[in-house]
Image (cartoon, rainbow, N blue to C red):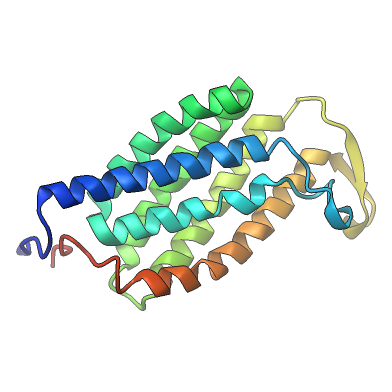
Length: 207
């Protein structure tokens, strides 16, 4: 196997791109950590959704575009940098428990997203971002809501859609959060496709 040479820009441009990616990631995660504390009260969905469900899926778009542009190794560095800064911001904007839960779920899910995307990046254009986001989102939701809310004393509610089954309210938030993320995984294909021509690989993948 031979290593292709860089097909792009100088180190200054790459450093700038990484800085933009880190800043975007930190902003999205901090906003999500704050918003997850507030139920989505419209349409009677307060027992099923929080506002965080609408913000966090954008993180997977940022990770995938970074991976496409800078490659898996640099994308992992961006994830680690984003993880550290996002946890610090989350401690300020949310509770320590939510910050810890968010940081753990973020790190595991985003690194998984990077690995899956990298394996599928030479396949059809939509496959890498869609599959990596679906898998990463499922892991993120399971880890975050369990670590953030299990045993927290949140009220138990009955869910009509589950035949009246009772469960802590955070379980409904988790299921609904996952469903929203699945929809966003599909919706994010639109901006990913639109940006493909502008976010071109800076370094070719080894072949």
